Length: 187
Image (tube, rainbow, N blue to C red; front, top):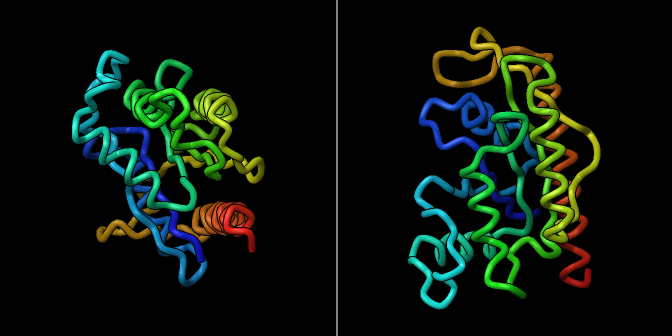
């Protein structure tokens, strides 16, 4: 089974996207490994640093190299992805010719209090990932509507309909990453 990185587009400590992302590993097929890849400490990308990268940026690229694929869970800010997420992708795609997303399969979803709240952000992210040569899962598109009452005090998701939505997404994402990882490995 693949090792999948989960990138939450929000750096807020109480992010609803993080709360939902935390549920995904428990719904995934058995044997799938996950690693949460943190973007919060990355400085703003500056090409003048390409010759002397900060340690946190090098660690970020190494973390991406250590996973077979990536799941993005992103909010929508001003009809696009958060600046922190775009910044993380910019670091990952540099220096020229060393794009960490080239050939790395990805899946995209988002969480909002509204049912369609992350549609524009997801579309922008898919465009960025296409430019980055990341094979991106097309279906199911997952626009997850957050409801606080659907979660138990321990953070577990209690609503069966929402569990089903997330399970469908995570199963498709894992299959997508696994398929591309096998091709990359020549299996």
